[in-house]
Image (tube, rainbow, N blue to C red; front, side, top):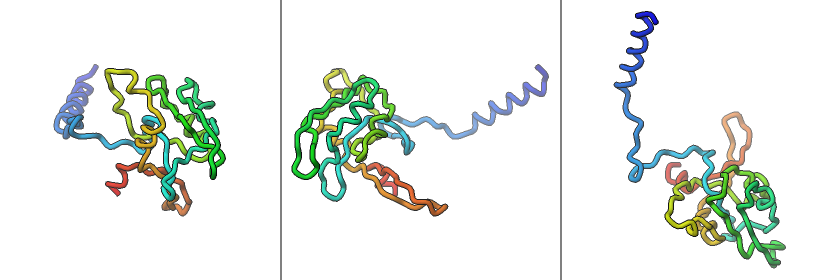
Length: 163
């Protein structure tokens, strides 16, 4: 190792020492989530009607590699079917997003919920009501990009504050 290489290394180290820290005081401050961050899968309601979007087709449960999603359904007057019970077992979830991709009506979305620590495993079994509450405020909209192409974008509640 030559002397020039050592001085280059010292220069890099010295330069990093004068940069501002990237540390975040976690419980009080939160880092910005990337738009494509995959947290807990949640159920989404329709923005115009306020009803759940799920038609109980069961494709999300079929696509799940760990059988995390379970549901029972019954006939519905306007949609054909709707879920009576819908359960996600968070400890077994891989957060892969296959359930989201398989849903034909986009009734399930990956949220930005990642703080799942608890002392009781039963708190990590999310039923339909909890999933709908966590999914409240998530909606899809179509916007035009700078190149002129139209793109469907999923909006999250925390983005509404910053927009």
